Image (cartoon, rainbow, N blue to C red; front, side, top):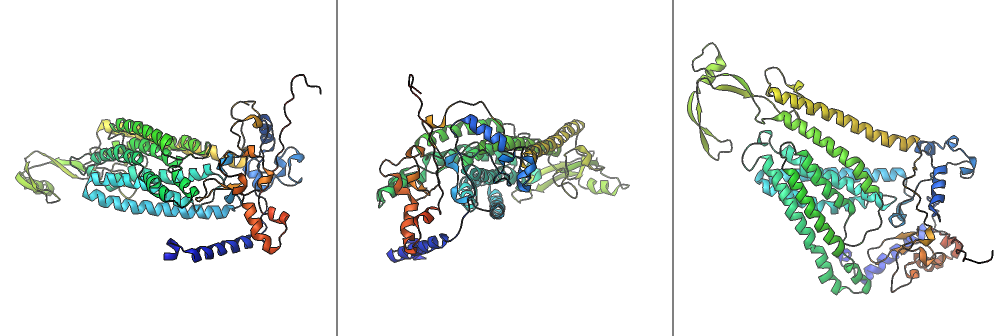
Length: 564
């Protein structure tokens, strides 16, 4: 264990030999090409190729050559190409491109189960905190919302994704599910139904306010203080043993776009969930989002590191699915909230009669006519209660339609009230019926809309659709040029390691530049050539183990007046 944490020279040499052995074993494996990236000089040429070669996912899976109009568009005259618009070059995860579908599926299934188990564990901890006080539970919720993104990042690191955008989308889904459940749903489940509107520190309204307060104060203070950044810059960087290590500590704090999106959507979802019983949450949510904007802007300009161009995956996913699901959740939660009023689980029974021997229940209730000292359930004290003849008699009835009778009732409409256990007023029944059926229709429409968007794209329609107008800007004239150069990020080196022979790549195609070292310094094909020389492997065979780049630069523009 000590050698793993603080390795000495012999341990490092042993680890180096193991890595060299694994490289030599991998050199004997044949890795076929999985993807080919093509960059066009003009946007019009790219659109034309995508329109002609794009087919639906069903045709690709079945290798249906009949879906291809021109036989010249088939690969080797027999295979249907899976042609689609590529992700941004800086977001491609080159080491995950060759993973198989079922390997990706089982990895994601495993991480999803781990995420669900962590949600159950956190729910149990928050319930224990809630038993102490609502304030304690609120800050526990804020704490778990802060630390869970690191756990989600660790889980997603075991998954396989073709691009950083899809990886961030996976992180977004896990963090959003955790934060929605942790912030809104847990509080609703662990709070007793009769404590929803009751006075005291245990009611749900005080808990909602404390959660808003924690999100406004605690979360923003942690971001502005940046404790890990202070440790890296002022403690670890001065003690670094090399310039590269020091630069790695000074490049800024790591952050995730998915985590910042979920920080916003969490507040909106939380506000929507409790808006029917706590409408003041809209103002608190606006204040929290206002402060989050300025704290994020400060960190983005001062302390956070620069991220690659992730593309529109997270923004489009959040825009298409989050807001529709959030509004559906608001309609559902509001319908059940209005149905649960007055949250006391009591229904009117009869009038109290002091001496009515014909009705046993009334006689029993009549024996309680008078003044009594009622002890509070938790034993904290007692209150004086006066029962008079003619007072209304009440009996227990379940007012929560979440678990009414034998199970969950949907939609939340007055129909579920049983005979003799009706607690809704006439106006409440009208409002509940309107909310209940509206939520039902909205949920059905949202499900149909999601299926309508998913099924045609996956199975029938072509994947590519033209978006926007052709800008008419050639690729070679773009100042911040970026191309598909295979590279792998490293926590040790300040710049990515290049998995391609740098002799074949024009330096203008890189989107980054080390001011101190040439690109050949990060070329791992040279390391492989030096390592595999002992196996007498030809240089051409060594280069075939890595990706290849072919670049055909456009001809220079003709000068005015030049003879052709």
